[in-house]
Length: 292
Image 1: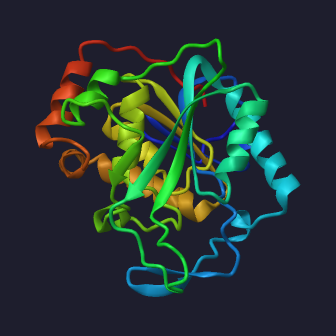
Image 2: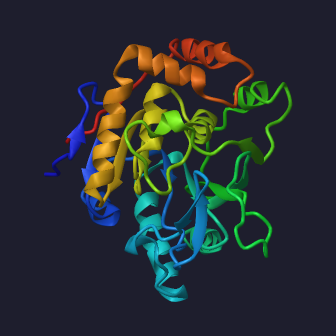
């Protein structure tokens, strides 16, 4: 039987330590949504800018490319494991840049997923390009796919339209990178902003749905899920990041902190819009439990 690295008292936030494929093979449970932030294969000894300082782009050995064929096989393997743990109407979101996203799209197609959209996240505050020989890198891509061409999926069209000023939500999202208050427990080198995960989760899940992140890092996915009254399982092989994840969950267990974070989330017309939506969701509840 699996042993959790951490499970919150409300049983809505669970962490496992280890390789996601090995662990998923031991789980008999299906998730309503998966968000995956896999290695981008960006660690090539280059340089970037962070908080106004020159830094190495190297994240760790887990982010180094092993060549075209091995990178493709890696993406095929974890996407296959994830598909087996999606509900029939569940969807998966995968983030990336041009370094990995084409491989991900190819492997999704080979596994008979149905690609629904490719979101372009246009960062409103990207770091500058130091070499001045290229355009500034200011976007990432997020593929949204369902389990198969024949399956159905949930899309909260009306909410996405409402938070977009009454117009259909486009596949280009103008959202900032992480804010300082999101790093209060420490920072993962590829940490995503809560605003981004909030929109993804609200677009494709219901209250009490289960969300999986197989490369959870500092668990922005889990924090966003719990802020929105969803349940979460995160997997990571790096213990230092799992400790950050655990501390971030403890942080939002404080009611005042939780409400403060909800109010700080950008991407809404005003502070009341998210609150009113969550109140309306209270009208229909259901739930399942992980048994470890």
